[in-house]
Image (tube, rainbow, N blue to C red; front, side):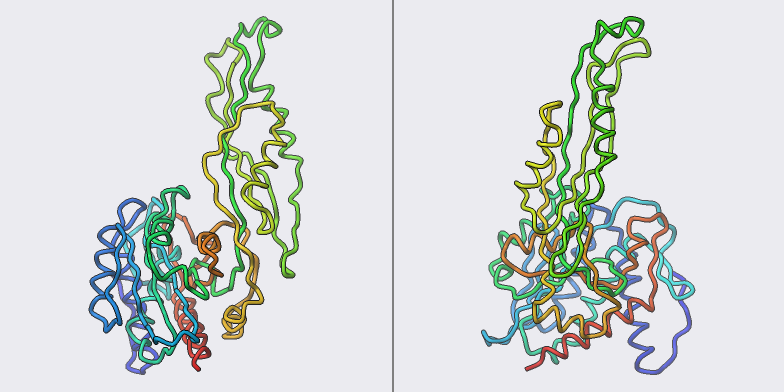
Length: 370
């Protein structure tokens, strides 16, 4: 690893330690499905702390009871981050020109680094219940995400007052999230010779009309708590579209992704998709991810915003705040990673954002003292 020079001031020493933690996290590869080594390493680091109760492990995910006050009137807050990264090409892990390079540097090991730094430096100053959740398989299908199992099995997480998912957001608070449906839409026809297409039924031609219709659907704005979320339909894949150059195709398969707003339920979103297809094709829903409300007026969220975040925006994409919402737990997104760097080749993130992100979290946590 290539390191920059450090100074001896307390602030610079701490920043150097935070950067080293991010480098350490990036140096342990954790593409989705291969998180065990990183989970082992983070767990080993956490069990060295003075914790009020043992770390709880679920497969390759851990729940860390960082602070327990025994005072039911004090808030119960969780900081949450996923251990896995997407599978992409990254160069050597390094620190260079004020940035850390490595898979997951932005999404979301910079958030994990702040969680670890809080655990290792701040617990004595916190007088409310704080839990850290490190989990696996976020970058895949909804049903395989280990956070779902953790929330089902852990005895304390359903009692939280707020969860902060430290997804990359450039130190902005991203409120709530849109829901997401993925559906396989299969158009069927009848084969025939391409010289006599009137004797056949072309599945691709049938699908083309539907694709054109989707392309003409404008984003639909929904204003919730003063923030605008957009509902959209998008064709993201087209495949299995023919048997030969001179054969009229009898099948054409699309993947349709519907992103729906927090005021729409999963069942309502699915009904919209069925109505759009209108019996012209067969539909198989392959991924159902619920939406999450903004929670913009929640008092703990208000205090986080007042701690100096860069901005406040609605979350147009999907994140695991929605899982917490399913369990009746308010949740928001806030993290220091660069949103534009997520899933990029040769991923990197700004150390200045990481340092500022920690300071924002420190101010927020301090503001919650009784």
